[in-house]
Length: 308
Image (cartoon, rainbow, N blue to C red):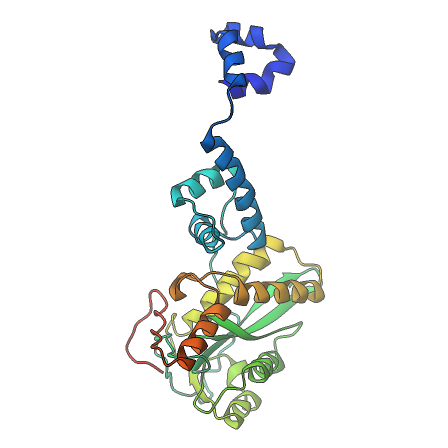
């Protein structure tokens, strides 16, 4: 009631409003003299933190991840409180849309076997990579972005953007990943049946570093689910929220920022609500101490039939 009177007192005056609402002016003035409650003060402080964290996380976190991030920063708050305050502030998380496929398959070409069979799990970094690409509309035409993801931690190990959909796009992303990670022999590289990933130059480059090529099964909509999931996050968290895009250069710079955030600060429930880089660092530390590191949970909705 006092909030309503405060909002309209300059226009109508306190006494006329109280008369219409049958509310004693003395009660209003008494309430105004009371100090703010402890809950009101804490809510005010939490709202500042919520706005800050939501903005720092690309504005994509919903209740669950905002709550987890606040706890990581030492802010102890109940999840229901975060939900209530987000509602008051009008803060919302990103909602993922429907993904579209962009790679073109060649049904006549020979292709490697599917060594993953929907089981997107790895016991350590550089054991299993998944790759896929997507398109983004810009004012100067379509742009295409290729990604390579390490299944162990969800870390994006390579990416590249281009104005044309050719095999150099995928190969450039692969070269970045190989330069950054320097994987040992035995790496499994999994993709869909796109011609970019079955080209001679691409498969020869994988063979040079001792990587094993795996291609998803024909007619299986989940054959490359983890890569498609990351691309879905990219489209939801960056492309649709920050567009329309003026040029490829604008998109490249924004993608660079997003990949850095994705790898180093974005929380993932499947790896214990920590960022991918932190998860890998913890694994390396545990390995150096001879500790057991539990396997990563499989991607939701996928089968667990064999491990690469």
